[in-house]
Image (cartoon, rainbow, N blue to C red; front, top):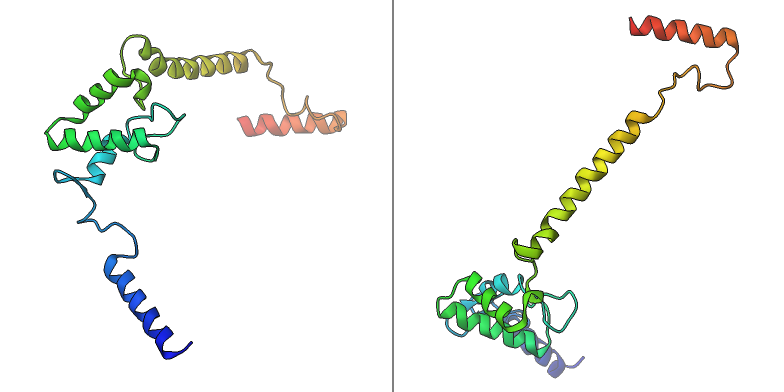
Length: 161
């Protein structure tokens, strides 16, 4: 590389260092109105993209989600709470936009049913274990002679007492 090539490389490296290498600087990572991207993403994380399947608004890059983040920033700058903003988007897109269903009405089933399944499964397992016959080690050891089986039973009884 000639002398001119090194100069260009050094200038480019300095520009990248000064500009932060393309990474948003925390002070500059603010939306209009003094609201930070972290504040916007805190709300956007609790909303799903109305068009995509399973992507939250904070990570989805389609135009509708970019616009939703802008609306969130404007509403936060206007002093609206997270709950008010979420209610606004529910009004616009319906309950499907919420990352977590509300804990009332039919949605309450989504919160209660998993717990009922766990309790029911544990109850069924306990009843199944209770009905199983208990066998001793000697009875379940087919390769022992009668003499060895008797000696094993005596040793087990001695250990129990």
